[in-house]
Length: 206
Image (cartoon, rainbow, N blue to C red; front, side):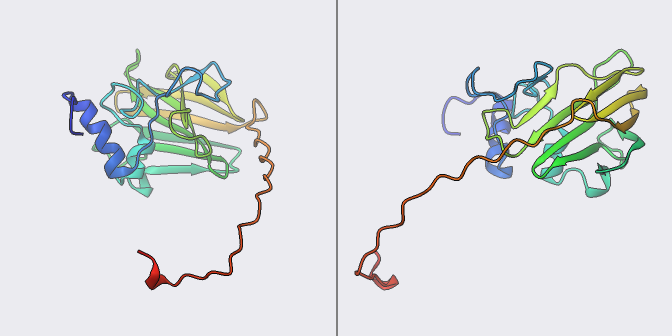
């Protein structure tokens, strides 16, 4: 923070690291991402930790405590359901839909502005097994607008209505492009720690 930072968004980005332990959501190098889906990219347009935008994803706002548990809708095995997500910062209506795909991997949806109807549905994944700078959060390139349908990782999203206030949409569980849990990495055999007859007590450590 000591030198060269003269942009407000850069200061807020760095404070995001120091105050909330946010990760860098941009790629450290073009080859850093493990993403194989051309429809997904780092959320540079949607989150300050990924680009020049001054906004934050609702997921990061949830981690900060800016939105409450009551403003998050969670799905697991529901076959079909209808949800409303608010696009207003001051509303107490739900603002984030979270679907747990497997332990540590979440599919998320939120309302964002900037479409012909005023707002659209943003879909993205949060993968805690991917380190920062390698794309732990990846978002759809386009917002889902009124009347549009998108299948993503075993779930179908259909936007029923949309305006500047929020999004009404249905979510249906499918077998299309289901999320596949990656195989566990083999455990590498580590050599035993060296043994020594010399013991050191806590008071002797300087």
